Image (cartoon, rainbow, N blue to C red):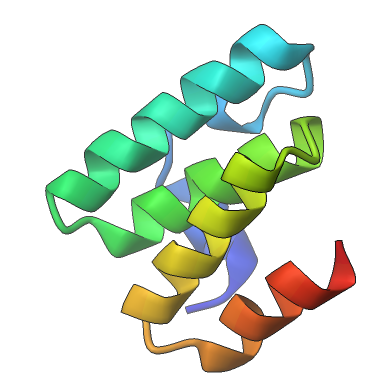
Length: 82
């Protein structure tokens, strides 16, 4: 599934580029999605969080969601590039 399709299926607030508070909200939403097994939604929220805040938690969460989606390339690159 391509990124535009993933982004279209997630809540709009996951994509907003506001300060740390929204990054924390996107992280929380991503963790909730992971706990429900909604890997694609989690990935989109973690991507938004990592774009808003280059925190280690956001980057690691993005890599974990990518791993569950069997996207080893993104899992490795997300850790290496940032």
